[in-house]
Image 1 (cartoon, rainbow, N blue to C red):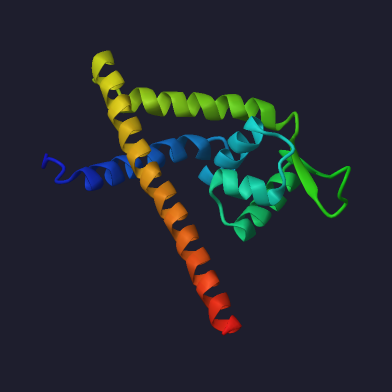
Image 2 (image 1 turned 90 degrees about the vertical axis):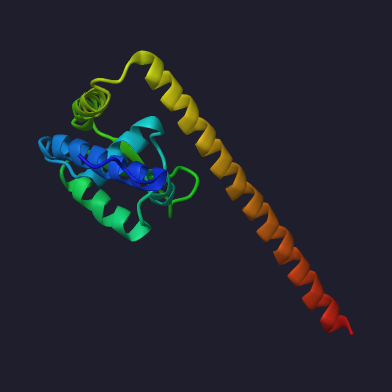
Length: 166
């Protein structure tokens, strides 16, 4: 077997294989990966709006609407009007969805167990520490870019206003 060449390739290939394995498990439950992710996100925070759930589950809003329609027709969730704003619909799991969440979690646990089959506990702890540090580094860069972009936008806006005043 050829060793993985770069960290980026290794992470991408690992993610692809890991997701594929998990996806096989949720397909046995009659769910897609997107549906299982959506159910898990909703379980963490019932009462979300469709837009917020799409953001939480990392799904495009139009895709989310179709998926929610299908899941509602399957009896997995309900949409209820918001008490303060009738235009807004909030999402809630049904009793039919609750046992599926247990099976989804079991599938995730089994997939992780398989992936870590011959990885010692010390290695797992080290792996998680390194991945967390890498995540924090990249998040900090994202945050700086957002801050930098906001500052540049203000400068551009102010420059435009100054130009109009002259």
